[in-house]
Length: 170
Image 1 (cartoon, rainbow, N blue to C red):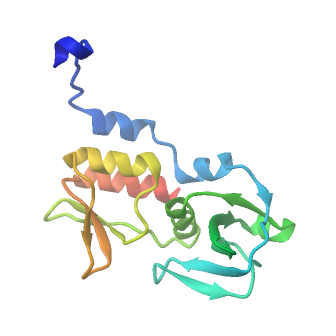
Image 2: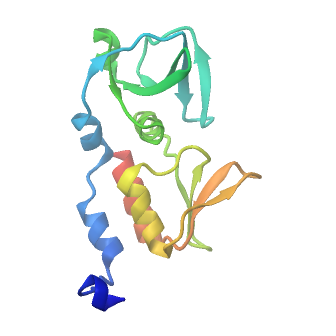
């Protein structure tokens, strides 16, 4: 196979190299485009303490929102300043959930040290490359547990889980 695709290189410390390149979540938030809060028929805000969406009458405070209109829905992040200016930052559902968890100081991840499993609530997968780093530890996608309503990223050592937690909390 290597003859057909050229040279193949194995990077033994790929997880640590990727961890070193990841920005804190606050940098991701700062880089998101800001838009006027879109029109919507129904709104829900993400509650990090319950890891669930709660219906609200409108967008009026800081938080991660799921907005529904007709047959489509969108997710946005509204900062304190954005709530005053009526602006939001659109983002993927996982990203806005972790942004809400960060500002509420309620991380959505835990680490089971005895089994090296990083756990997040179902629907709050680690966003983007943060999740890729966790999956790279074992080379497998996260496992779904319907009983605990969670996802488990296998083979994640404590130092990786700690660093991911720090990045998502800052």
